[in-house]
Length: 413
Picture 1: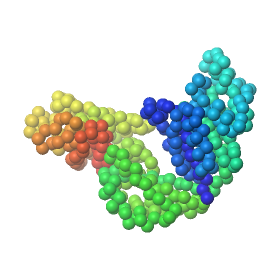
Picture 2: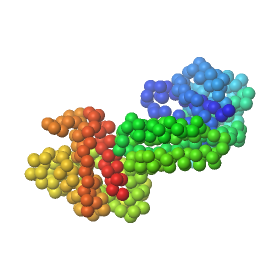
Picture 3: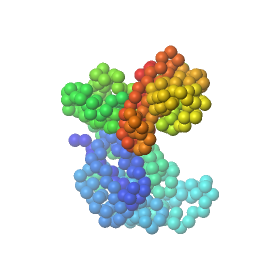
Picture 4: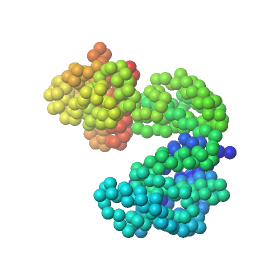
């Protein structure tokens, strides 16, 4: 039987939506990485009864419980005291923990207060876990062969604790040989339901040890193939075989067989080909440029953008004639093609991308409803263009337009 786990995230800030619970996704991935299945994620308030109830239920059903939050130095941080009650423990002063606190405060030239000293008070029956990035130590408890680990809720501190200590400790404790492997195939240019129909036969014949999940986002569908087996080598070979079959079925929609955004794929490909790119953006307002420049190393292949949100900029900087704008409108195939060709020429790049559309929720004109977007890509020899029709959601329209533009470029490689 596989080792099972539950994640308990403590914090009122999570329940009122003030803070996004990024800890849960990170911990789930970390546990899966050592062959431990996550059965449930529970988010609870900083309340004694809530913590006791959640911890009791989690340990009853699972082998491992990871807890985050409530280990700070203030009065509302009660997790440590509740854990003492649950595990029949008492707080004792830890000189090692206090020495770490003093060293950290000395580096920052801060005095150690009595409140800070209280963080060196730890349950006497826990195994302490050092915190290289903060003052609150983690705590490892064992009961009847099961493990509960309490960590700070600050992601910066929690991730270091997991990477430096807890993952290794869990693997050593359970010696789990049950492997859980995730592989992701990135698709674009196709809707989730249409893609599902195209690969239905392949999905239906997947071996029992494999399962498929569809993870859609604006313009992208991630296909996550999950494999579970005691034989890691055989599982990897099987997943390679199935992914190769998948890629042969819908090659036109797949841009990567690893979990990366399309902008990363574009930058990697352009860099490998020693080619350059420029962009001319209207309705996306620089969002494509933002995506590209968020990728480290993009300066090697991405030269820049002309954000022509206003028609005067299209005329003065992108050489779109007033007559063309009057005849066809800014959101049109001739205009977007001219934008792509001119930005490529002016910035002297191998490729030029252009986008012009009606992001909404206002701005519709006769024959061009909200969500109408034209995209063009020019490589100096050929200019290709395509029209897309999206919804009334402005932000999603911008996101989907950017992905569509990058995908149109991908199809030119």
